[in-house]
Picture (cartoon, rainbow, N blue to C red):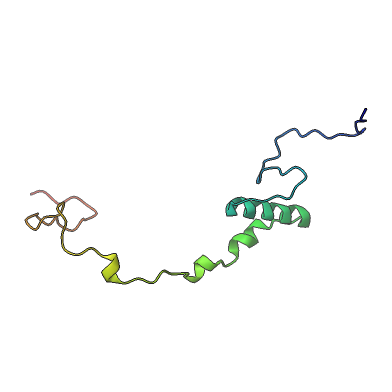
Length: 103
């Protein structure tokens, strides 16, 4: 007969705050936001200082303007007119912020 340890801890929740509780294995996640939140929480908890603001102020690759997919206007813009926009259609006036005045 196997003996139970004298001190066992039972969780009051499911342990899935930021990441799924891996039990005794390593924590792995495919969600970058969840991983970042967990890392900021652990850094804040272990240092005793809020780390989220510093992480939010850090420069990331997306702010530097890349990566871009090279393309040309010829590939991106349509040629000619389609059936929903025939040549005989009346061109609408440029939109304004207020209704036109009635005389």
